[in-house]
Length: 386
Image (cartoon, rainbow, N blue to C red; front, top):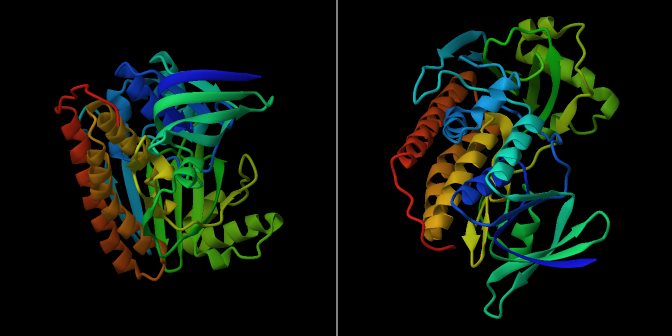
């Protein structure tokens, strides 16, 4: 079976970046098709932690209440453990928010998909992009989709957006240039544990190892350990639990004691490492958002926040017809975060040095939030597409 359809925008990838972009474009009156090869409400590898910028956006988009109704616990402090030193920072109320949140990805992504659907987006799961269409002048003008039954849909669109992850098919098909590549990467083991009080985000740093405990849904904490990839090399699935326990003990004996005798609600998950990159943001008839365009190591737990930020930056660029602004602002906000994350991922720091890196990270995050706040008072005049 073959079908032909036409939209203003075809978005490939229906997780947080793609769903948020689709929602924002549809709210401006655009006809949007959002597709994903995975099913609705599926899980994915994630640190879950939302920083202030992401919470600000979810609040003003009207999405945050659903996450709270689903039992996402508020996070009102962040505690950093640098060796034996402990530093707790309260989350100060600002811009209508008094807490941070760390929803499970199945909840966050499906909530944004629902919001996109409510805005008028056509949403289809189980569909894979197999090729792009181009005009005679080379401009991308649509794509071909294939579903599990073998049915083909040819879509014409003024804009094709890749929100399909770090291994983006859209990025590969358009030949998006890599503008910056990281030098370092971490490997991560994590699981979901019950029984800890949901006090706030907690991060531990000692030479050669880092750990975190992030309160999320269902009374669980996402507890992770991060290390250089060579420490994970050769570890089998059966050996993950032993390595996890060893690294938690290295990071913080008190945390290890809290987890002693407890088992995660599912087998430990692993991220083997992938070097970060900043890709070309857009070109004739196409754009990239989320990890498809900008991926940084998970050690700073900032990926979702950046994805939502870029969804709004891209949507505004689309409706104003100024694509250069998306690339320029995205790069200006991303590169300081990218560089400090790469430095932390190197694991060649002392405790004092990683504290200095976190101060630099905090300044970059503040600039990001300030820019997002400024968007609330900047009118969007609807003109033309990219």
